[in-house]
Amino acid sequence: MLDRVLGLLRIRVVRGVNLAVRDVRSSDPYVVLRMGKQKLKTQVIKKTVNPEWDEELTFSVEDPSVPVKLEVYDKDTFSSDDPMGDAEFDIQPFFEAVKMDLKGAPPDGSVLRKQASTRVNCLAEESTIYLLNGKVVQDIVLRLRNVECGEIELQLRWVDLPSSKTSQPK
Image (cartoon, rainbow, N blue to C red; front, side, top):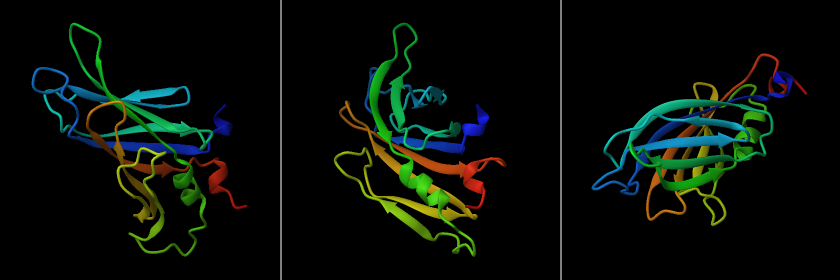
């Protein structure tokens, strides 16, 4: 099974901005990320609509065409958790940048590509894929759907596995 894994996608869930109020005056938000059959979630941050998670969640990637789905919930003690919006994003542009030949690598901060926000994707603004400490990184701000307001900030990083197909010369 592991021989089909292309590498690891490390998603830093940075923070939420202006999330919806689901309790009396605030919310207790947490994020659930899904990629295929994998499902990971952040800690719950109490009583805020501007949570700072700064938490890293790691997926193994077999098929970069599978989108990452994100859902935000308000943690409730005595009832089921309330949905606070959802989004999804495509990692294909990020994966293509990871596969680029970066021999004689451009300097840190070099922009490798940009992903425009469109009606089809959930990007709140243009997303930049760039080099940081020699690694390919993408900063993403997602506008949540099916909710009155809210954005989630993420940062993607790729981790090559020693035997992964992306790290072998073509």
